[in-house]
Length: 140
Length: 207
Image (cartoon, rainbow over all chains, first blue to last red; front, side, top):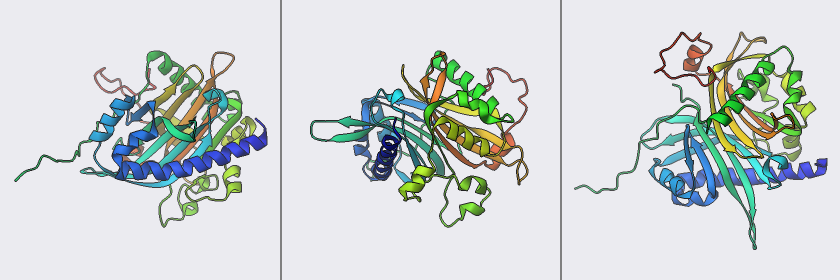
């Protein structure tokens, strides 16, 4: 990969990550039913060690998850090397912050996403290919 | 008068490591054992063998409103912290993303010497295919030299690996997150595991 290509990949990753983080946490807090649209049909979520795969199980999971108030304090991203993705543009996004689920105490959390770019005839959209969520104080 | 519109308040139970299947579990746990043995050694140069030529690596620490992180106890990591929520300048964003094997290992070698508690590791394998393996490791380490006395930290690292020619794997992405350990985590860390009955939870790395 030429270094100018790499710079462009980093800039693209940063723009995608920035918009994604804002959109994702607003959607999970305020428009939970829309959240599934951000995931690929084949996406996998590992939520505090519970693995959920595919559209219908994810919809069911998000429905029974109590309503949330997320606060993101930090996020970072990296372009994922094309050898790992067979050339499909992919971004690794890492987020950290606090979350208060209704009826539960506040937790710190870490969340890692792999976002992939999908081209359609009219435009291209980023979708979540995998999602890994963990409370950071889970051992307490 | 009652209406049946109660909102859910029950969270799914928190579980330990998610390791997909025995084959991938074996591969990942062997890799982590080797990786952190080298990482905890005198010299981290040996890690040159596990990073892809074009790999990326970056580090973050938590950010708290109103706190000056450079004065926090995580201060030594602050200069490398790539928090995109705070850093808007593209040139700084580029600078803090370590790119290429030599730069990454050089960067890792500058970080404090460590001892990781392999028994504390919780590992989630989030994507596995013929071309990539993505896994997240949460755990505890202590710094074994440095200005403060053996501070205990918690970390979360996300690794993306591709198969290497020799049948092992090469890291293409490494995202490091470091925070201070909680009192409870400090209490439990590095406890010598007594022989436990098989019914009790088995630490992931113990096998």
